[in-house]
Length: 157
Image (cartoon, rainbow, N blue to C red; front, side, top):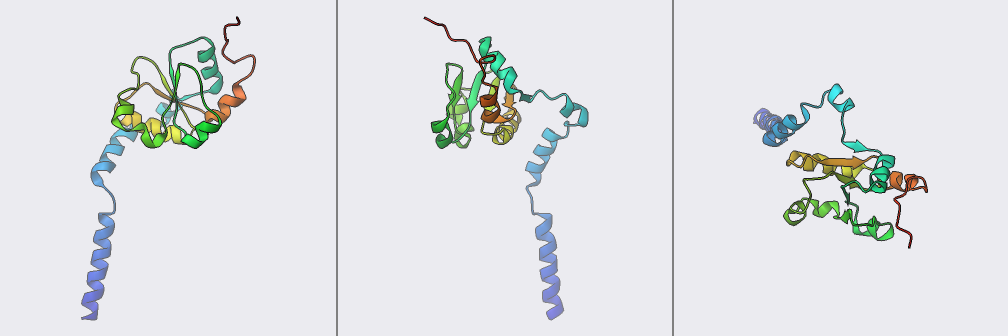
């Protein structure tokens, strides 16, 4: 009897580990990540440097700076201007927010350091939004890049 119980426990442990993940989701991720070879990653345009974003702002290039930081973070330091929006990452994938994302210009995701923005960009790309980039180094890098040389020009009146 004892051997039977031990065998049943071992069998259930083995079968539980075989079902420990969602196979359909794993296949979906495999399809997404399988093309990410060394060469593809080296040539990736997912990340954009802060100096390049500052240049785009200075030259008034069409883009959306999408701040995905929390409400608290954005209340301390916020992005301004007509080309920026704040949508916290916890609301980014809600239909009303997804429906307002532009398809005709780059979307540059901004978080504190770039970590959350990278995960959000991968999610957006997985659902078919292709014009997404991540501000490398996040708002910290953007603040460091904000100099009189790089800052957008304002009309003086």
